[in-house]
Length: 144
Image 1 (tube, rainbow, N blue to C red):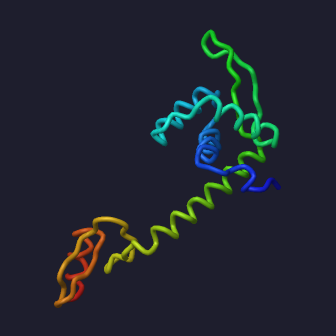
Image 2: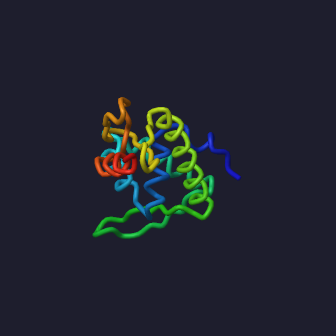
Image 3: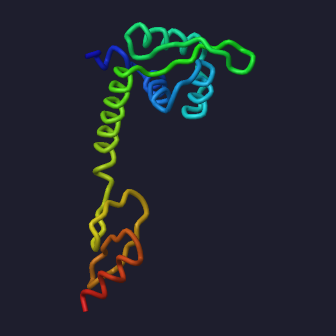
């Protein structure tokens, strides 16, 4: 199994694996998508050595093909690359959950988790949090 820290040392690498998880892409496509997602334009000097390293580690394959009338190297995740990408997505999701969990509140009626917004109402002298007006109505209706 390939060591995670060896491959993902920054967000550019992480995003590159995520983009390739969506499907095969050539280097320029990756650079354009990374710019859209991060707001920063990566250089060819960042992307192509990264792709070369991923290929050397067996996480991507590269196939020369014509895109329009230009020759391009199209990169595709290997089976190991897909496993690695999935592991990173799970790890990232776990980290986001750790950060968000303390900020979540629970709907008093249905128990769903509310990150932002929600609906607060005074019920029997207490301020309660609900995910929506409907849950607040149903909750209050069941009190009577």
